[in-house]
Image (cartoon, rainbow, N blue to C red; front, side, top):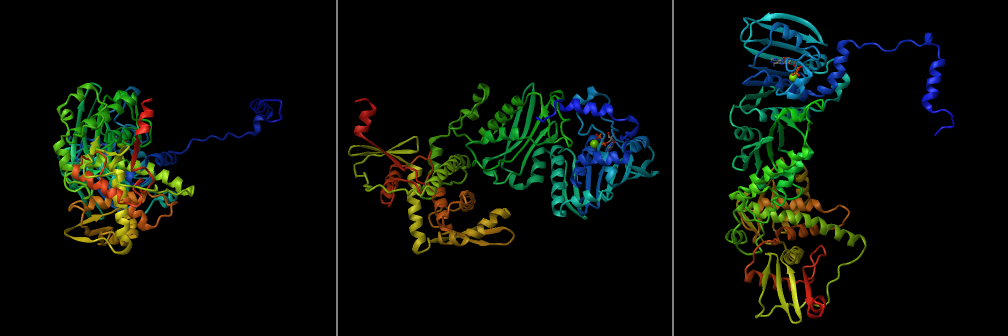
Length: 629
Ligand code: ADP
Ligand code: MG
């Protein structure tokens, strides 16, 4: 603390008391309305897209069945919304630009029962403070409409006008009077992306309304009124058409409905994820977590499932008034919502993906549902594992089965990887055990346990082999050897598949394409981040190439840049890991034998390339000690 004998606040008071009041001028003035509005606008209208949201929501609130959005110059020059809603009276048309002018709430009580998108009466006042606005509006019951021009919060012109029923609001030259803000705007492409995002969110939550979006005289969207599913497909792409699972649960407390993408639609970048609470788009990391939890074990840990979920509940138990643009809300009881969202999505996914190992933490009633009771039959499993185990693990139409193991795979991958990093950092080498004699004889009986481990009797005990780890070692050595002197044989695809990558992945692809060719994958650039897979190693099953490359890229990216593996080494490791037969796959006796034989033909059979054991040995003395004998 300071040296003063007085607490700071007392000293201040003393100074204040001794000052001569006559010399202290009053310093508080009331800001003129237009400046106050400009400041308020900073919160509500940050960029053209914010105006899009507000204007579209106003049109929705006005009961419109058709809403058109017209943009030019990414909304910097013009942003117009035309609706066929209720329209406004002459007085209201003038009033609507006043701050806190709203027809949607009348008292504080109403604030807790909000059913409209807007309620603060700030949007139009803010828009009028930072742009030139032209409003045309007419109610069905009026003969003529009203035209009003506003600039800098001031009405410039008002006159009767012949007009269709409804409202048109054009916002021109956004931030013309606040150059600092105008300079802060991003490129047209970036602002346009924000606009499309906002448009998408509103259009998604009101599929019964026709929406169009025209930018620079080009129609980007024409969304006919229809079902939610149709709207989702219109907005997010037809590739979701057959890949959506219906989510629908109803309780006294809340209803949830919408769609979740099948696991195979999960993407490497967060994108198509939408939550709406009482039809309002919200961002909630907490609820997103609930959905991610529902997908756990079904998709790789670092991929993002698609979902469009609507939560409807009594407006008295949510507070939508905690955020300037209302994108965050507060639930009275967040935990209930979380549990509910998770259960609803799990339940929905269970209807098509019937893996028994999924741990459903659902309540008993959900557990009883036939879709959950249905086992993932052995038939299906052997179908999934059909063919040589060396053919890669991806089997068409078994996405749920495959994705499940690849989740574990990615998790281990990281754990393994970290332990490997430590070893590399410590300069410690993984030593090959001195001798690795195959314990296999013609009489040896192999048993698979938990579809993951293989027991192999040895002369003084037994070996417990991990099938995935073992196979990874085998593939690693085969691929390293093959890549070393001559390229792996490629099989040209009859129907080469194309894949479009994100720019980031395309950069990775450019980096590894040459080495991939050496390893049997012929991939050719096709312009604009698109690549054609012309050929794959002969033992990769047709139809899986895209998926394989996808996962390969993922795994390749996981290598920490600190570890100085060569590109080829990274690729070989990633490929070995990715093509290895996964834990949980039923193997035939023949496949087990092949695996054990191949493993003991390796130069370092006892560990994976990452240094984890491929098998454990249990000797008789050891076993006896364990039994206290
Ligand atoms: P809020 O939506 O929070 O009420 P706004 O500033 O967005 O505030 O709008 C103010 C008022 O103007 C609204 O309450 C509504 O009465 C009226 N209004 C705005 N846009 C429209 C529209 N497209 N059609 C009919 N009335 C509208
Ligand atoms: Mg509004």
